[in-house]
Image (cartoon, rainbow, N blue to C red; front, side, top):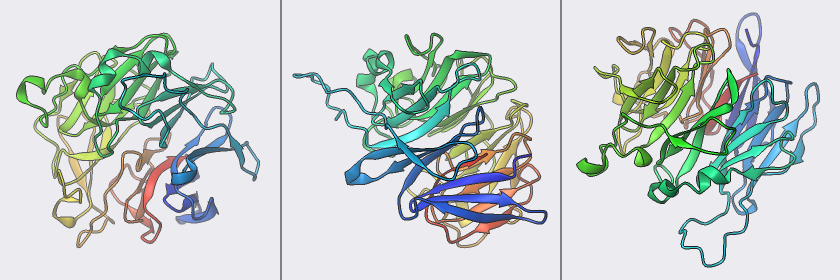
Length: 363
């Protein structure tokens, strides 16, 4: 079981460590700076942190295994926009929205998803990056649109542990895309999803779907879970087909975060919210829902979570599960952080006074 985790917030990166009695806040890094995403690379122990510095742009820092010092490395950047291009998108990285490590047979390979919807690859631990042109140039990108942001973005990157060249990404709003050749070519993988915010004749269009977050089960890689804008979907064939979970999960089937058990693809967790414009916990009471049978039934867990006057929203990357499938960490936009050691049944409070939390991850 991991004994350390990381919380990326609007005002710095915080470490959490496990004692014999509880999990406690520890060191702080980049205090005062927004940290949009944190990635502990389990292949070699390197830690990566992306900063969202507004006027100064997106930055990326790396801390080597066993080290204490952070080194700024290259940040993903678009090539110059072709002269005379009709593309209305500004080719400037606003934010690094997600980071993912390549496969175990690809030391040094990293993937990054950005706002606007670019996917980038590094082969040298972040020292250099290149835009994955084949995805950026798909004709369907003209249909992509902003969801929570005013531009589309890549927020989910799911590397297949069986084949490092097979990667599925989630785009909000642009559906799900799969490469099986390391990014040289891409195919849409959102069949079965439904966008009820679109006109009825376009609701099933794959390229306009809004998957809020997609996760893959490492132990059963063909099994994927998606918290969509319009509900919860799952796939058992690596995204070739998606099936909506009905009846809907208890409390609400709207939300942003989803986590999947590392070995059991039938078990997944969600954090329900009230759609659409309110984006607060239903009835102002925080809950985590869990299914252990592929969505046939759900449990709603509330033990230790605030149940009155709670307006905490959990972002896409605000829920994580450890390698043992029992310890979960959750962080909210209101600075609340909670941890469960029994699969989500009971939660202990780490803090209620952190800055707004963007992402959490176990070491």
